[in-house]
Each structure stands twice: as C-alpha cells, then as structure tokens.
Length: 169
Image (cartoon, rainbow, N blue to C red; front, side):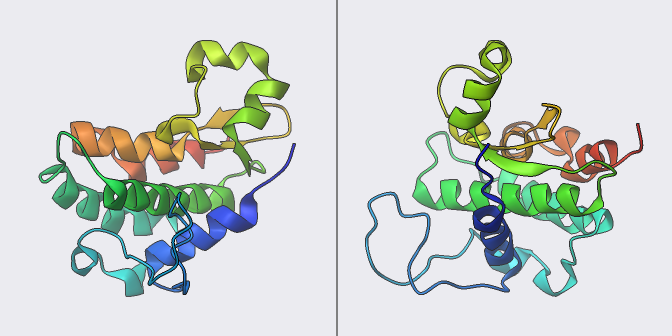
C-alpha cells in the first residue's frame, strides 16, 4: 500500500506551528496564496506540543474550546483544522505505539481490505480519508476521533484514545 506518512507528518507539523507552507496545501482548488492557520491558534500552547501522549491533554483543551463553537455547517477552515489536528493525533500514535502504523489513503485501504467498507463506508469522507494501518490490517482513525470530539465533546478525548492505541497488547 502507498504510504502517505510524509504528507500527514507535514500536516501535523503545521498544527504545531513548526511548518508554514507558502501555499495552503489543503486548498482543494489549488489556489495560490498564504497558508491559513488552524482555527483559534491562540487557544493552543504550540510550544508544548512534543508528540508525546501527554501533549494530547493540550489538544483536548483546544478541542473543548472548538467544540463549544462548532457550527452546524463547518466550512473549509474547519476541514483544515480537523485534518491538521487529526494528523497530529495520528503522529503521536505512530511515534508512541508498540506496533508500526503507517498512514494510508482510504481508497487503497479499502481496495486491500474490501470487507472494511462495512465499517468505514464506501466513500472517503473526512473522518476516514486518511487512516493509520498496520501491516496486518489493524486500523485506527485519528481524524474520526477529532470529529467525534468536535461533535460530542470531551467524552471523545484524543488523549484517552491515544493512550489506548499506544498500550501494549
């Protein structure tokens, strides 16, 4: 399967503020211009984001702030924020889990694991457009967890999620 680790690592770096591309890499129309940041970046202590599971406590606090403001019809800035936040959560899992995960595009994963459409659905929605998978087909969905937090609040903690994913089997 084609791994997209570098692309998602770049999105995670954009979430932390370590990387700011000259062109918004998430603009689906490919328009040139300045890179837009995540929503309410002032609510996130980016200097303390070190890719540790503990750093996700800061992300939970940030997502709590966003949850209170989550619109019924989120726009492109929310999509960008979900992608970057989910990429950071996924990179925390990749770097701390006892098993090797790689980022994989939805279509490739479904092609290799056709029965997965029962759970993932048939379309590459935002929640599953990129997922983490192991060589033996185990999968986890960081973008989905971020969306769950935005919709449901702290019960969908990304820190607890990552603690579970990073626990020894």
